[in-house]
Length: 437
Image (cartoon, rainbow, N blue to C red; front, side, top):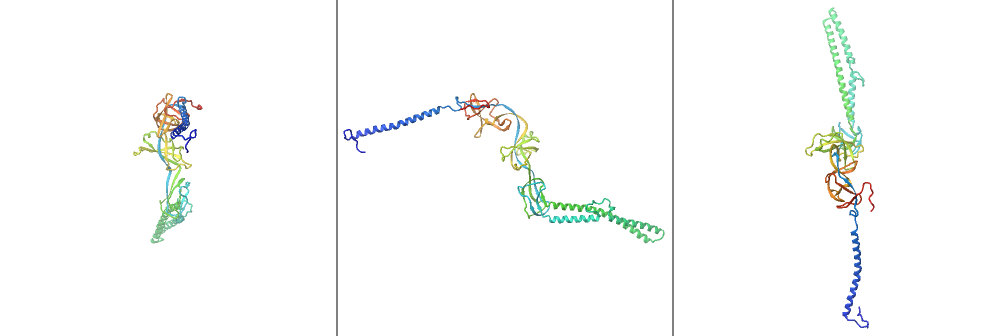
């Protein structure tokens, strides 16, 4: 920058120039400072206005609330228990005959009907045994002289072999009688009389043997027919069938394997009905009754309630857990519930006690602590409670309060906004719309 001049065109001294620069800088700083001060004043004014604005819950704007006056109620106690679901029936099916597996007709997860064939064994050898036994029965019936469907004879004298022996005996008897008369008349010798007597004794013995043979054949017929039926049963057992309707849990054999008697082949479970086995605390032993309707809950279907009826109560308390088992039966036609599910159960009892209930919306839960807002003058204060559980009845979902409240306390519930410690409130009747803000 060149040297500055005075009005007469001469140069100004350096000291004068420095004073002029300082004054100019001072005026420039003031020009910057004034807008900043104005902006600060505006912001300060805005903050002051915001700070003095009223909020919901102060004296000018009390929070609208509903009040619930705490009172004792007589409640019939329900017993809480846990347990598991079990199949109504579970059977390990095994083979009753030996043989090679020809067909496997069902697999894990299949639903089967009662009597449905699950596994077929090769029936060839079993069929041979049936044919052999049928031949023996036919042979015995032929010896008895009866047809394939005729019952065993009741009168052995009607059997042909016995009738023949009886005819021989009749003839020998008459000949022996004539021989005796002729011997008296000296018409035959002693030898001839002895021969007639011998024939008579022989035919008499033959007749007795014929009667005994009929009895033997009748017994043999019974035995042969039993063996025939056993062979037929074994042939039928070559098809392993479901003893009840259910579903296949496990399968242990494959086609081509050779199974022996009592070899396990499948596990069948019946799930159209289920058993809920519940562990009930021993202090409730006197309050559980047969036929009581139980509410059951499972994690697989949250919010749903299934029902069963108590069918059995174990008379013994387990010393380790101090619980006894109660079993409830429930229907499961749609198959939604599965054996093995964990259960939470609620069992009704006839025990009655005084207790306090609060609507669910009147209880606040924060960080593991349950609190309510109690009325204190025209303000509310936080108060910690200890709930004993939740229930749902004609009054809706409610908390049972074990500790923290007494009859006569007034609990506040905000209609709009949130309550906080020390909030000023005003009661608004039920069904009244909140005032416009």
